[in-house]
Image (cartoon, rainbow, N blue to C red; front, side, top):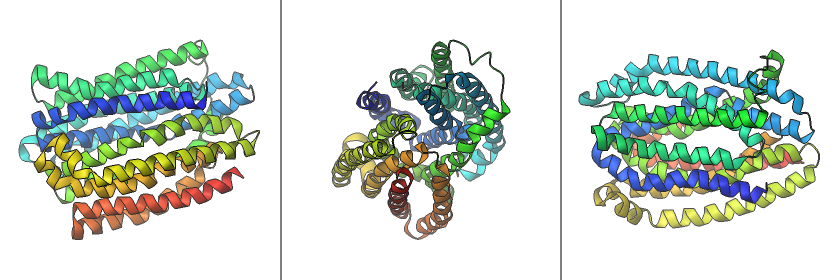
Length: 422
């Protein structure tokens, strides 16, 4: 299947849920209230972040399987898949137990939630912990599907989950009322359904061979030779993206966090375009780079130019129209509190989008150590600067800090990607 067609499927997979979200978020915000909706966005972020307890093995499976397919070494794939999936299940359970332990302090203290919502927040966090092993397993299974470049199936299931994440909460509220715990329960149920669907797809592709394969410590170590460094990036990278909202909730309030998270989450979803391209690019580069680095470099530069032009156009439009977009979508009051945050983050969106191409290129060559080192250094600088900015400049300080971080991140990734592909 062509890279263009794979990209279009990835774009559909990310874009369809976004359209549903644009329609349903105003309803959820109205019915749950600003504070409860802010908590829901935090829980969405937590489930997504704790899914990184797959320790990079989802992406590692894609890279390793794509390489094996390129050199026609397919007999090693079933044992590799079985070993990786068992590990993602175990680590997902550990992540779930960790969130259960943290549920009480998060709900009663760290999120700075009003007393009337503290109990339901704590219960919701406990329920959401079930979604962590479901998500880590799904990440591994999706990595296998994408290694075979079957982006049609991967994205049909991604569309289903994305739509369910918005539609299920609406149905719950319409049927049972504005219950945060029931809304979160519906999200976990959606992930269970998608997990079964991915497992079925992998089973068809591999004709059940992976199910009856033995666990291989050697294969797991091979995955870790690539995935361990990727894990650092996969943990620290999203942590830097989501840490600001949790720190805002802790230092300011869960109510105010919505004025930051809503525009941030809307804008960050525009990264579906570079995300669609890099998801298709990653297994293709991983297979090409082992035999023809010149062809890999040509493909990389072509994708980079396309993403740069698209993201520049989006950023200009969003930054200049922030107030009117928010007013039309969520009303005058919300727009007045949030438009300047929207504009600043829109600038950072440009660099964040471009950076995805060199990031994927570096990791496709097996050099995940470079991105790991970069994110360690970034995090050590970003966190204290973020706290300082919040103390002295409030929400606008958090937005500026985010945009500056992704700018420097983009510069470093562009530099190192050139070296890795030569």
